Image (tube, rainbow, N blue to C red; front, side):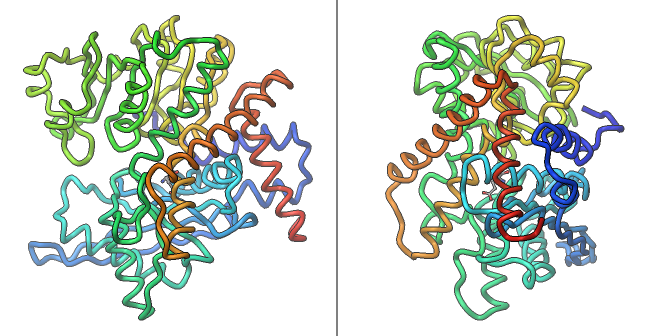
Length: 428
Ligand code: GLU
């Protein structure tokens, strides 16, 4: 969406203000929670492969750490802004609170486009980010992780730079590390699987048999790929995915009525989740415009790409068959589109609940890293299912009891917990 007036931080604050009003929060708590506690903006000089010097802009925003060290990913994106990072840091605070893990909310970013960077240049950006932030992060302070266009390799370069600076091993500094290098089994799958654990519970509540359902997914990156896999494993069918095409600078939908095959699509997908159109067409996929994913006559929509994707200009295109929307991405739905979704009675699993599997598994990773003792994959995923299911049930129970939209119910639970922590510490 190229809506120039869209400001994710204003949207995150509007969502917060609405919940704060209903919760009747006192003025100091509102003032504290509607702004980040701390923000860092800095330059990262990098010697490029062609010998020239280039300066990248980096960010880290620590929204709130009343419940524990800050936690949240670092995004590499050409359109990154301080306001996007502010919004995402606030959503991280609510995300950690709604799944009840002892962590606060942070987020980081760098304005860059990894499509146009070599691996060495990306490594320099990672190391430069750490050199600027090393004093202000740490296992007991603020713990970064991967996010849009960053991976386990980026986390390991960052950790290595940090360990060089401090002259000691600190595997609890960062999560989403490679397995065998302090990473947790199941972390790669965690966000996508977590989305589907909540989808499973929502369909149960709606009295819908998952085996009878179909879905359409926006995005084919880490979250989307593992959500598709688990959803298909438990009997659902994904008929459409959409993704960004870097050459054409627009997105396309890939449709197969009989169900898309993620393994097949992966053979011609780049490391950013971009699918090669020609090869997909040869493999029998129908190529549609990027907006088509939203218009499919399915039961379930999973926006799992970026923020600001379901807006007033396209929300009416959602088919009448859609019963459930599970937000794999952060902030995919704007507040005005939200109202229309609520009015139509579509069940929505809000982003900071639906996609909390990633940070929940990051928490498990940090626990394992700090103990230097690593669990089996089944144990990690089993614990993840327990956490996600109980968070979903707490939110849906409140929504049912108080006749609330799921997003509002999730906000009440998360904000109440954070406000209580601020009060208990004597901050408010
Ligand atoms: N970047 C992910 C998110 O937005 C994971 C954060 C983490 O693991 O700390 O939830």
